[in-house]
Length: 159
Image (cartoon, rainbow, N blue to C red):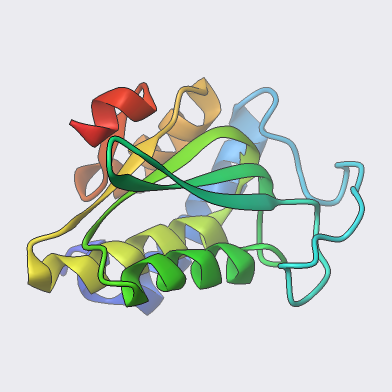
């Protein structure tokens, strides 16, 4: 019996990296970090990455982390830090609004899987708002859609 990807983070990360590479060749608009024009570094990105931005707000009392730009190996640490701040504050249900994300690789998927693993013991959930076909396809091809709570709007994620 093969363990589920969420049971072994290293296997999950390797599978996600492989899936990302397959998607880059098959999904128009997914892009490649090597051909994408870089933006100014984000101060929340410890490595100085690709212009991802993070904004923590709330909607109907639910914490919402809005993510925009490119979530890749350089900016995933910033996303992880912002999610951990919310989890450390005692929130077990968090909405991650990814409607502004124009690229995400396995690093971002790994952050989301790690967050799910962190909140699961407390009965919590990570609710992801993703409307782009590319992101939804990435979640489905990698199997991450099976462990994430996917929504079309922040309002539906907060219900």
